[in-house]
Image (cartoon, rainbow, N blue to C red; front, side, top):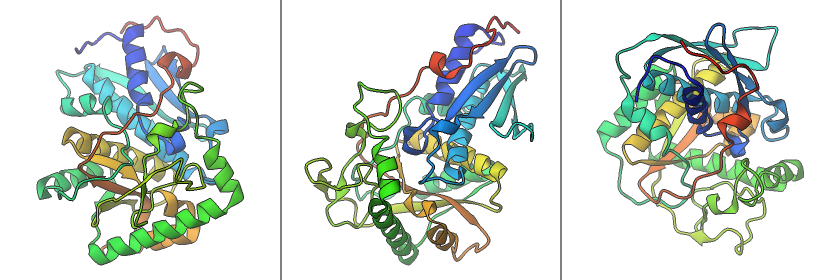
Length: 331
């Protein structure tokens, strides 16, 4: 369904699409407000859902909001409007990370498969099969990142081993650091308790060979809580990076990340995010030292493959996320 009219139900659908985006620890650190005069949605950061120890600079928070911005853009186009996006539009309002104005009508969305994919995309932290990703799919994922101003590179076997070692070192530091471990545990919730955070069923399993260091959200690796299973022996990793490392670059990286994840979902490819090494300054610097571009700033490490879909993390509703404002908009 596409329409040139912005009604209250359409607005709620648009915000629900944005909220379906991934966020670090499923903190969903965003809120939306409609400016009815300009038909513009503002996307603001929610400071109290930032991770003070895990993400002290707010880089991952900006990536998360960038993912929501991409989903909103895709949804606006699906409903027949041109999304006009501005990042950090008002320097005197640092919590205002982006605006998306509903521009003129368009005949159709050029990427209808992405709108369908955003409702089905979610992380799968379970073992994948050994089936390799087709070259054409890998090329399409790289092009998706490039279209948003980012670089998606696939390391070779030796570099993959090095990235896994850096991630393993970061995971060890995270579980050993009492502040970071406690902060991570606070976001593991019973699914009946909150629409934020990680229900235990979404946490996946641990690689019993400890080759692929999946995050231990409970920060204790107790076998009764997180079962151990064999993961793929040669995982497909990809590194998303940007040429600069400013707040606007973090938001662009988030949009690139979500476009990559939606394209992967449209192809039936599962994904999980290995973010641990990005949470330590010295290890992140080493992630960026890729042979093809030493100037790149690593923003995310992705693990891709074919495997179980896994359970979906909860999401807040559009009503919970949309700031109270006049919604009687018809344009």
